[in-house]
Length: 154
Image (cartoon, rainbow, N blue to C red; front, side, top):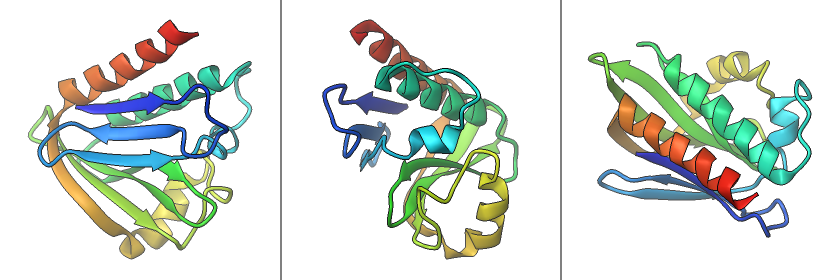
């Protein structure tokens, strides 16, 4: 299961908690600070909670569209590095998920529109922090739970 918890009272630093709930479990603390820049201004976001919901929607849509070729989903947009998931589909409903990061680009440099090109150029530079096999259903259920939890708090 993939879940994202959000500290609504945070200051856009260390306020996103990205969790993978399969053995071995994994937790990455990230910042909301550059997420708005990454997503762009295609839709109006009135609050930090709206921004987090848009971010989770982006992650969920990207997970649903994953094919056999690895797709990078940025999660941790830091001013010193970018971390995220390299996801590929294995045997239908099973996802191969790796948490990776690189300091070859930074959170303020990466946008949704350019993520694929930037990653393609730097993929060999990724450092792997963990690797899991997760069911598509588990990933989507966890992200849906995360979205609903944020909606309940607003």
